[in-house]
Amino acid sequence: MSTTIAGVFFVLSLVLFVALAYRYFGDYIYRVVTGTRHSFVERVVYRLVGVNPAGEQSWPVYARSVFAFSLLSLLFLYGMTRLQSKLPLSLGLPAMSPHQGWNTAASFVTNTNWQSYAGESTLGHVVQMSGLAVQNFVSAAVGIAVSVALVRGFARSRTQSLGNFWVDLTRITLRVLLPVAVVAAIVLIAGGVVQNLSGGTDVTTLTGATQHIPGGPVASQEVIKELGTNGGGFYNANSAHPFENPTPWTNWIEIFLILLIPFAMPRVFGRMVGDRRQGHAILAVMAILAVASVILVNTFELLHNGTVPSAVHAATEGKEVRFGVSDSATFGAATTLTSTGAVNSFFDSYTALGGMVPMVNMMLGEVAPGGVGSGLYGILMLAVITVFVAGLMVGRTPEYLGKKISSREIKFASLYFLITPATVLIGMAVAMATKNRETMLNVGPHGFSEVLYAFTSAANNNGSAFAGITVNDQWWDTATGLCMVIGRFLPMVFVLALAGSLARQRPVPASAGTLPTYRPLFIGMVVGVVIILVALTFLPALALGPLAEGL
Image 1 (spheres, rainbow, N blue to C red):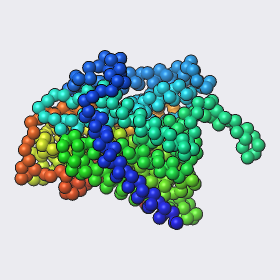
Image 2 (cartoon, one colour):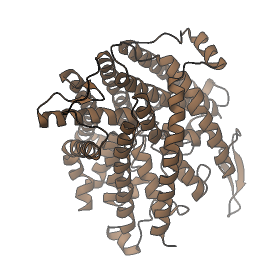
Image 3 (cartoon, rainbow, N blue to C red):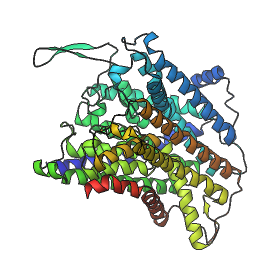
């Protein structure tokens, strides 16, 4: 079987199983976020934190709860990194520097999980498990909670309440993320992923020398990573490391886990607004963009354009031989279409245009299907912009799901869209205008691409990197940490503000002039708006980087 045919079967099997999970897992998440009964464990949690589970919150209170929880998480994780040498199971590793501690705390609390360090040689078990792994769960739960709050804004009318953040956070963590992580971790362990708490193992290499291999809770962190909640890994090689991703079928499992929750969320949306066709439409938009990305990155890598790849008839540099070019390219597309940021090959070694596709995936706003929760609220904000544009074309006040999209709503949606590109482009401009460009390991368009990718990844909370740039100094740690925080929390303000504005409205009956938002016309319009907005925003930067190199 040729590499191309094997790659096609690999992708088709993923599509089949993700399609099956869309309905059943989406229905399960729907029951979790809409149920009224609380388990014993949940009631204990509410009592410990002093929360009334029956009390609901307006959008400002919901937002303050999100930010208060995230700020406390940031301070707690920063403290752990700075006090590591005094913690048990530190493996004798020193504390992080102030700037790297800030970067790491900001990274994991924002669900970016960018790592400017090698995990196995920098952090001990307590920080890895009690700090990073905990944030892998709760930061992902925060994203899902915010998306659910936005959907409640569409589904409810004449009310101030959007639910209770603390209830949403607890339920999503205990009923969705933890159970899936436990089951998937067992599957990965069966596939050969290491799971232990040893300080390391001495093994004899082929030369007869003794090599120290650090151990750790790899399987647990690997499954958390592939649930779309972690771009980092226990080992610096990430999912290219055989301890984290040993076989082609564990590679398939990891990609499936990456896509599982984001692709299930449109089902939750459709059921909560009482029209499953709306969920199908949003799913179709995500699927069109995702399939196009997978096809493009596979095409560019399998055609292996470029002097050296053409000479050797393959673009295998930077690829893991266990997976091959196609499966590596599919993994790269999946991890940047979502906010996972894991890698099983290195984008810096991709062909020029092949490396551009993961970058563009993030520039789309990671909405195809996007991060856990953030993908759904991102595509819904773009759908609001699409409805507004369509309303202008026919000269009437636009409506979406029975809610008017007036100047107030479109301002929230527009500001949401503008924040991340502004963060990326300003950060990149400052880096290129200062001596920090000296940290690039390459020059010319490729070096420019490394910087552009770094800020795109940080501001979009992805966590992957071109890996051809040194980003572990004071300036880079501070700058990318700020980008992560701005790119995560400022857009959430506009998401929740829009949700509050929609929830207060009185439903508008559909009329002959109402745009049906579940038909192919609307699906095509949303896809077009997403592509056009990204092209208008990032095309000049892309022209100076990957396009210049590729052409």
